Image (cartoon, rainbow, N blue to C red):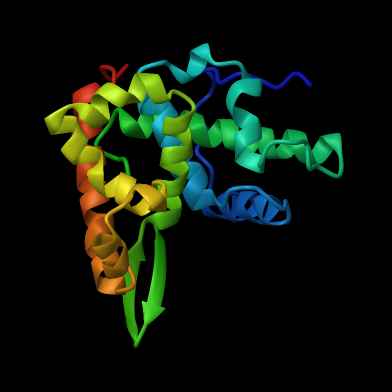
Length: 199
């Protein structure tokens, strides 16, 4: 099955809140698909990756969004998801080159308080990293960029490779909130470090 590639020169049409909700609903009915928070992290990784997203065929990355095999009830449903994902990628590409970038993190309520939770976003980001593990490895190994990425890896990486004490701390929503803010700050630094010049 041929899938469309990302076109960085396509029209900039950011998704409205209603369209983001529609995309989340479309993905939610697919058994193995990402939610929009994970999708936002996944696309962020692809857009900040050493290999430009535009150089990848659609078949190389779009199926990861919906879990691999074609799960769609119709070609129309697949095309709708593709269109919304590609539009979000284009808008995110522009945001990552400007001060306007804001990640789509979850918000959870506990004990009457609201906490930011970046786990889904980080899981998506790490799925994007996995598509070019060799390309990302030097960034994780380098001290400055490795420190920027450490909170992302803690929240979204393989639990079997994590410090058990750090994982135990993640049961506390306040700790997760603090980590989410570290993720945001780290990616802010990373995008200034690696993102192309604004165009």
